[in-house]
Image (cartoon, rainbow, N blue to C red; front, side, top):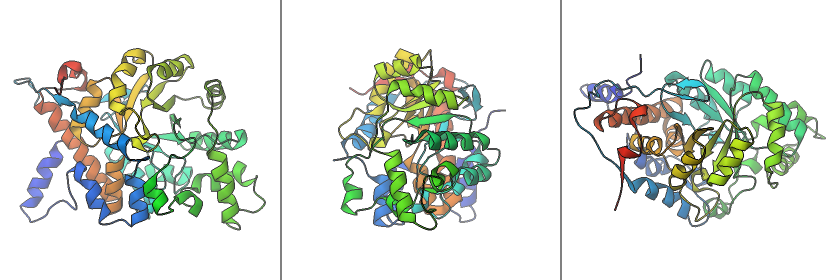
Amino acid sequence: MAAQFGTYQSEIYLQGLAGAVPPFTTDPTALESSAREVLETGPFGYVAGGAGSGATVRANREAFDRWRIVPRMLADATERDLRTTVLGTELVAPVLLAPIGVQSIVHQDGELATAAAAAELGVPIVLSTASSYSIEEVAEASGDGQRWYQLYWPNDDDVTVSILERAKRSGFTALVVTLDTWTLAWRPQDLDQAYLPFIRGIGTAIPFSDPAFRALLAQSPEEDRNSAVLRWVQMFTGVDKSWDQLAFLREHWDGPIVLKGVLHPDDARLAADAGMNGIVVSNHGGRQVDGAVAALDALPAIAEAVGDRVDVLFDSGVRTGADVIKAISLGAKAVLLGRPWVYGLAHGGREGVRHVLRGVLADLDLTLGLSGNRSLADLGRHTLMEKP
């Protein structure tokens, strides 16, 4: 039976009879200002900040606002079904947790808390290469949860293969290759604080625990952290790959491969031609190219170009259940949710992530029904009207 996530609303109201209120806001658009109060300046800026002037961050939200849902009545939508199938696997809802690294800067439990909360709700995680904990530690915290692995592609083949083999052994079923962050953008919020977690040895647990990487070092990371950090930063940044190099990943990963960071239909076609199984339409949450196209504006043309060949996923700017409905209506099979649950992690660790996820899923469930739809299959361009 399909989960009825909207019952979280009733649970909150009933607890209110005993004087209990949610641990922090249920409004995902208010989480950023709320998190500012509990995070130090450096970590907050790292999560909230974008490239350059922040134009792309703003454009992502403005793009969602340009589309309005058109509710239909008497649609027999009392019971809803949020299930969908992505890469051949059924998901309880069209939501995954986006790959976000260095989570320990907002809460000491970091990725372990996130993985446990997601598994409890049946929502897949996408683990970042920049994790604060090792692949194996996160897999243990995830238990039976669905998990994908995101790759920041090292410039060393042996290290790449070793990391992929570890991910496969640890039950990560899909590989998500981030294309748009082969070097860091100009990010004023981080630069003004001279704050970059990686050079402080944060978010390096995966390479530091990798035998192939450790074999390259004169001394172990425990003995000489600074040299290990420098070696790793040079290994995963500074080199842009080419389309023909995807064959190497296919040779060493026998599961689905998804390319993240696609914004042009021609790149989507190249991905399909290269035998990739999915793409994520994403501008990295506005963190890489200032003034770039909003991801939602790019979605319809890409879905039309390759939606019949690969699974089209969406990322960048998603905050609410209504946002999820808009992205699905414009051609995505599922969305990757980012900053909101990171703010939840900052507020309350595992329970904070759980609270945010339950809220977004409840909002999605209720909005789907109230707009006159019973399942994701009911959604399409007819669900929306473009703002004049």
